[in-house]
Amino acid sequence: VPGGEPMDEIKPTKKPSRDYQALSSTPWDLFAALYARRSHRKYLPVPEDPSFVADLESFLDAACDARGASRDSIVAVTGQQAVEDVKRAAYKGMAGKINIWLGKAPLSAVLVADLPSEDVHAIRPVELPKTVMAIEDAVLWLTERGLGTCWLAGVSEREIMKVMGAPSGRSVPSIISIGKPALEPKPASYSGVSFQMMSRRRKPLEKIAASETASAPYCPPRLTACGFAAASGGAEEMVRAIASKSLPTTAGGLDLAIDACLEAARVAPSGNNAQAWLFVVVRSKDRLAELAAASGAAEPGSWKAAVVATGQGRLLGKILLDRPFWDIDVPIAMSHISLMAATAGYLPQVATDIDEEKVGRLVALPSGMRVAGVVALT
Ligand SMILES: Cc1cc2nc3c(=O)[nH]c(=O)nc-3n(C[C@H](O)[C@H](O)[C@H](O)COP(=O)(O)O)c2cc1C
Image (cartoon, rainbow, N blue to C red; front, top):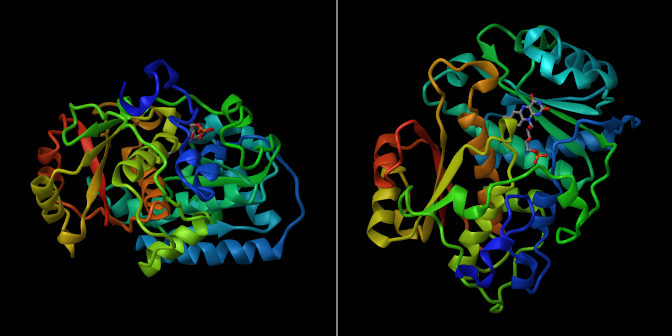
């Protein structure tokens, strides 16, 4: 069996695909946050904390810098009254009906994705994926601080924009609730049972990942500990490393790095937990060069491997809740992949401004699937 683990061990849950910590001589901190994160819908009231707000703003600066996102595309709503106003607006009317639970949730903050409408509704948004990656970076950063979050796309965009005084021409594709979780995640122990019990189910790696082309399922490799030292540090350290292009560790084996990146994508949140995505690993030299060219890589020679991140496109005739959030879900997973690459000693280069048709053809992507971006490990 590839990977040295019996296949029936790989259950469709958020249970780790393998014991990643055993493969590193140093604490592989990012995994703890990835596994501890879950969508929280019950919160406890807490007093306002000005130093938290300052830290959050400073993290958002760093994340937007690392992702190339416009800083004003993420609004951190803090302060009790402002949070209350946005929250109430969010679940008003039909559009927010599924999130009526917000009414009973004492949130401490809300992140609002605030983007040009034109971009959000474009066939291929440019700003949206960058903003989404920076927001997911923040979700992991918040998780590390013991805070609960939930991506919310089923909200009343119009009402939110009204209370925020957003000018016309802007769009709010999603907001994130933030608060002290009523269900405290047990810190650190990601091989323990606590987080598994409260996690939503996940597809196994070989169902969401492929090698070279979309139709060839990924085979988890056999891996052994061989002196690899994962970068310790969480979302903040990795975001800053990506922004400054200097990694806090040296590269370990590529097989392990890729496997860890796919696992990071696997446990990412997605709308309705649909996981309607496929991550295609490209390693073959010639194909990698072609992919780098189609992705507009500045230094194609530095690419050691790449993950083509794809998702089910909008289905014609399906709107609102049935709409697959490929343009949000897949960039969320790209945040996870790239942060994980950094912990494994590979500087991630995320390309979203790509020749989608060429990239899709290269990995033989079935029609209806969209390429959100390419994450290169360099
Ligand atoms: C783009 C997006 C939109 C979402 N919208 C909502 C929402 O409106 N209401 C809600 O309760 N959860 C929402 N979620 C949370 C998902 O249901 C959740 O991530 C998924 O079920 C996986 O569970 P987990 O996050 O606990 O791992 C959304 C998630 C994403 C990524």
